[in-house]
Amino acid sequence: MRFVRHRNTSEPHGHDEDPLAGIANLFDVSVAFIVALLIAMFTLFSAVEFLNPQSSVTMVKQNEDGTIEIISKQREEIKVQRVTDKTLSGQGVRLGVAYKLSNGQVVYVPEGQAPPGGS
Image 1 (cartoon, rainbow, N blue to C red):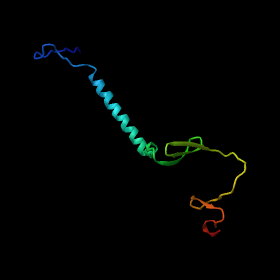
Image 2 (image 1 turned 120 degrees about the vertical axis):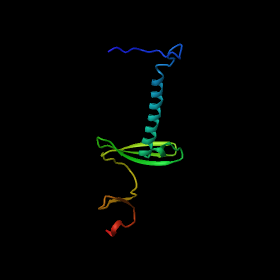
Image 3 (image 1 turned 60 degrees about the vertical axis):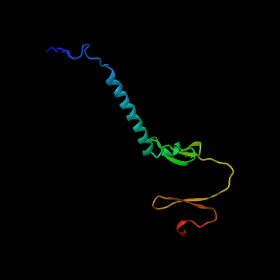
Image 4 (image 1 turned 180 degrees about the horizontal axis):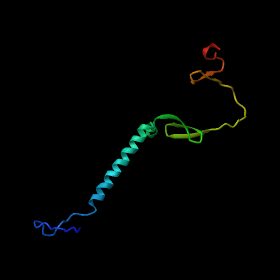
């Protein structure tokens, strides 16, 4: 089957449209879509607080390999700490004791106070 191109007699020079104009529109739409996705990701992960220079945020993240990272932000300073199972030694002062309750909650009791539940 053969396609025949018919010229419009009202336009003396034929079609003056740019064939790449549609691609430029697709580019604009894709950029807007990417910006919307980035905003949605920041909102979903509550990372908006990381952009505020006056905020203080602490986030605990567990990677697929089981390592745990504690990400803390104090105003403009961001620190990443990796939790390990290595035993450390040194000099220090005992501050208190942490107890894990039956519901999974961890409670810190400063030194010299009674543990939770009276036991």
